[in-house]
Image 1 (tube, helix red, strand yellow):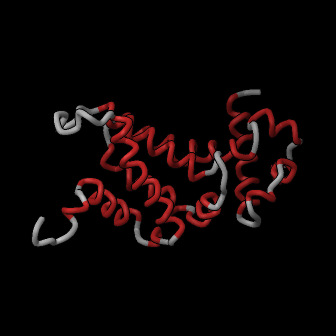
Image 2 (cartoon, rainbow, N blue to C red; image 1 turned 45 degrees about the horizontal axis):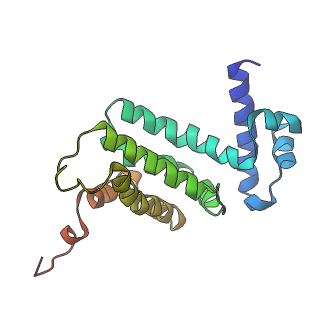
Length: 191
């Protein structure tokens, strides 16, 4: 089987999964339902995916990770949030369904890990501006700190229809939050 045919089959299975999740909860979707929708036999599914959770990883990889990776490789990180929100906004009802999936392999957990890995990549790619102030914190600790806020904000934006706002505006708002502390956001007489 050629690499192109493998990708086509994976895409057919993914498309079938996407159609099913728009109609029913993830827990009720079976591998047989996915293969029937893709017009392939059950063993074909297992040649490409271990289980239906692995389809979530494939979707994240193809629709978001690969695009973000290109930005990072080309030193275009300033566009990272805009691209992320654009990808999610393009198919927001689908991503809402994915965020409803629970468990260790949930889309929420996959997105958290992806954001953490991306932030850690950026922290390792560039030198820290104030290494003396941050010396007690590892780069992993810094990445986790920002990941909790950003991953939850991304989920909140999808689940609460903030994505009806243009992705550029959402990205600009979160970019501002990332570049400023909570104390910079308020006009407090003692701060």
